[in-house]
Length: 135
Image (cartoon, rainbow, N blue to C red; front, side, top):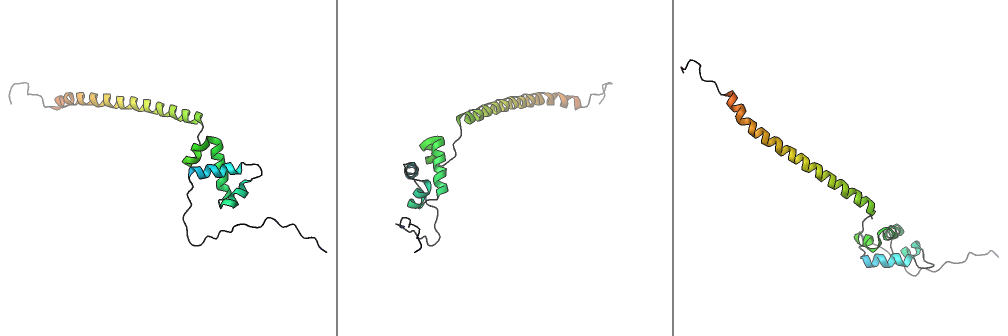
C-alpha cells in the first residue's frame, strides 16, 4: 500500500475578495502588533501574513522600518534616515544659506552703485553750452 504524505494543518479561514477595493489602512498600533507577532518564537512572517491577510513583503517592510527607527518609523510609514545623514544635510543647508546671503548682499551693493552712477552718466550726456556764449 503506498504511503500518503502527512496532511498539513487544515485551513481555518479563507478570505475571498470580490470587486474593486481600495488599499487597506493599518494604524500604527496594528503594524506594531503584527511586527511583534512575527518575532514570537515559532512564528514566521509568512505565517503571520497568512493569518491576518497581509502581504509578507509589507510585513518585512514594517519590520525593517521598526528595526531602523522604532515605532515612529512605522507610524510615519516613511524610510528612516541615519542621524549622520541628517547632520550632513543640515550643514549643507547652512552653507547654502550663507552663500545665498553673500550673493544677496553683493546684488544690493551693485544695485546701489548702479543707482549712484546713473546721475553721473546722464550729466555726461547733456549737451554742453556753446563756448562763445551764444545760444
